[in-house]
Image (cartoon, rainbow, N blue to C red; front, side, top):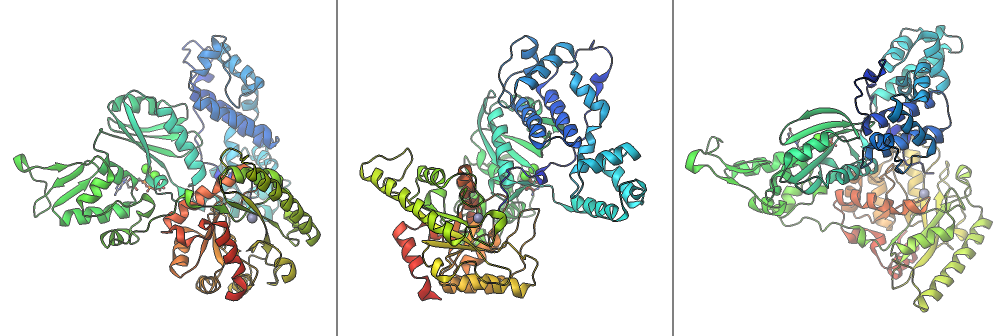
Length: 633
Ligand code: DGT
Ligand code: CA
Ligand code: CA
Ligand code: ZN
């Protein structure tokens, strides 16, 4: 089963310091203008307090969503509302608009003041502790006055929590463990969250005077699966203007530093953002420098030095035998308009950002064996998706229509199988009913294609919905349907969801059972991990890769940004050992069909070319491959 919510609580940013309440004074005599950032902070706080109060999630989310929208609003919200113009803001309904008007005109918001008098917003940090809910949080606040994480930690470790009526010694121990877990959890953003934030920032800076181009550099450009901070590189004629705008964004929380060419801020409930300015026409070495990785750059600098140059973001500077820059007339700085030029100066071809990790890409570059990386356009279909027949949200028809409009040749519907009751796995009877629905849909598609009535975006050569399943490998290793039934599917994806803590030998045997079945074509999310929340299955990976290669069973790169499984390093080893891969969305709703993009990113990090991936093949070749499975086991 797959988590469907797009922003799990684990995505929560690191602790954000409570804002100083300097406007909490008496009269608004100083009348400091209320910025979008101030408004956003207030509504985020309201959301937090309501969370501690145990309000329904949709209500707290509504406040956070409104806060985000206000932070991004392209106009001065408070001033506009104070002037009596209630310009609509997406995500801001009438109730919140009223509160904005109240604050903008009177300098106070009664609702906010009442809530704050009741509960400190810092308490929400305690809710991030695994296993701690709003009741416990309010209890420790009301009895011991504990309002933040350090306070709770000290009390729990000092054995003071168990003195509270309603908190047992074992609960206290669980809280201590939970705090440890929380503190050891890496605070990095999942890539889809980082991408959304970064896109937002770019759109807010794009219109600033003098800005010619903004590049999202750093680990995001290299498409790492998690992102520490965002790095924006701005090509501009007016550095001052963009830095001014950047440090005054509504989304900004604190300004960590601002100079003439660089600035850094933290975002409200978000990561740090570094912004660098580059002069027009010299982007090549700037891009290389701020894209990284640091290891890749160290390699390049070493090569440059051997050739008599020192490499920095500003360009290549001629150096003498001792490595000192030449001076006077001998001084020489070489700059390049693009990265290809800069790489070329070192005798290298252009190296794709996804490869820049110093994992052999420099050698491969010199030896002319860099891969021709796969792109999303190479995918002709998606081998793993769900409908509301199991645990998906949308109907078979709606999912199929959406896939069709993506231009695919085929989509495989892979609802869960019977033993996965929690995901409403299908009994054999339901499988037969599903088959009929699919057949009817395909008839309609074929008829429309024959009449030339294609929906926008559809593949002119036709679209087929294939019937598959996500076959559960049971705890005892038995596959969840009989061979006879399995043989009737167009394609079968198998996965391990239950009994995940078995010893390596058992887990490996279960996975190999699936790989060696004459009817299983793809192993879905082979490691079973959820990024930052659930560890990998303990598998003998070489045994898995060998068997998969020998039987031509594809190993999936699952595109869900929570999974990205196989991870890039493993996917690389897998195809180097001869395995075929697939890149799938595992969509549970139409919007998630787009998840293949994150899978393609990881495939590129894994040096994958189109020929390594099963679903780059045309429909007839795919079906031939599936038909050949029994002969390969
Ligand atoms: P992250 O943010 O942890 O996900 O990973 P990166 O790679 O984005 O790292 P970050 O943000 O520290 O730096 C972005 C790129 O800028 C990095 O890949 C290389 C370059 N860079 C920035 N500052 C330095 C530095 O002080 N030394 C070196 N060698 N490279 C730097
Ligand atoms: Ca970064
Ligand atoms: Ca950075
Ligand atoms: Zn699935």
